[in-house]
Length: 397
Ligand code: 3PG
Ligand code: MG
Image (cartoon, rainbow, N blue to C red):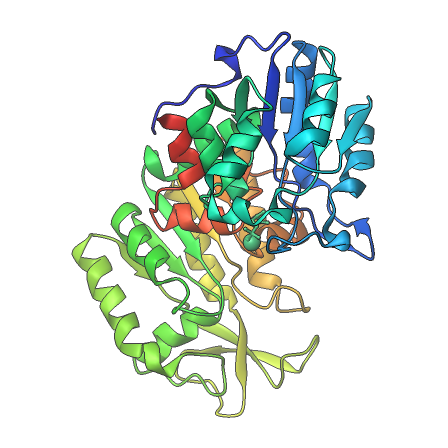
């Protein structure tokens, strides 16, 4: 893992600390529907305020594409932050310029300010000098606590870190340490579970994982593509016929790398993609032409559980089945519970994240019982793909 400075290295008293958060929270009808990202951020904010920093929080929200879109204002997050911290967080209507500068100048030690959406400026996504300098002007030091936005080389994630002394916040630090334990420097054997709909969107991920892990378990609809590529009938299951050659190549490469790929041994097939659609468990080669696989079967779960028993590390991205609709959550829930049990027993380090993995783990009731569940979607995936994340690289300069 690249070395980076943390809050341990920062004497924050009296300093203007620009903190990049990820306040891109899910919002429905003007209400925040999931506070996880704020909850995970609070320890960093609390620590900096307790140390007497003058705290300036910035973030993007949604994708306003350089325009001032009122519905994409960060203003609603002011109340959420104030409540989470138990002390007032002020708000500035712009993230750079005279208004932001005046609000920063008015801050006393231990006080906090939230700046308006960085993506209201075109320069944010372009990582341009004007925005970067405008942000740098506000701050003595920069703390990045937005691992989940670290795959973006934007002004507030990457650019400003080049102009102002940069540190990792506690959440960033926790994410990086967990990821290092999972793939950077893991205890072996390492098992990865990858699910999801499409092989085509996870090519880089499968390629990188097959070089790093000992067992790669493939679930979700992408498993159908692998099964079909092996000559098994998959009925009307979701699959990508044009990816069969690629799937066979991935299997050959994995074998050459000494990575075992574990495909489903049995499937739960249903009439339709609907909750409680009539269903049955079938072996491979017994999928009726008019049925679709919506989950993996109990034999597959048994096999995965037996591999986990001897594993020391697990990386999990993507559910086994259509976990949003009952009863096709069964395999995901069963494996998740076993992962939680092994983690609590101390035999397994378990890290999950990316896409709908977090909702699947939460649905299974285990997100608090795993070693680490990432708050990141795209950034977690890019990291699993072995890519350098610009926001992280900027911290280790
Ligand atoms: C996320 O929610 O995944 C991050 O905040 C990044 O958002 P983006 O995909 O709009 O860059
Ligand atoms: Mg995203």
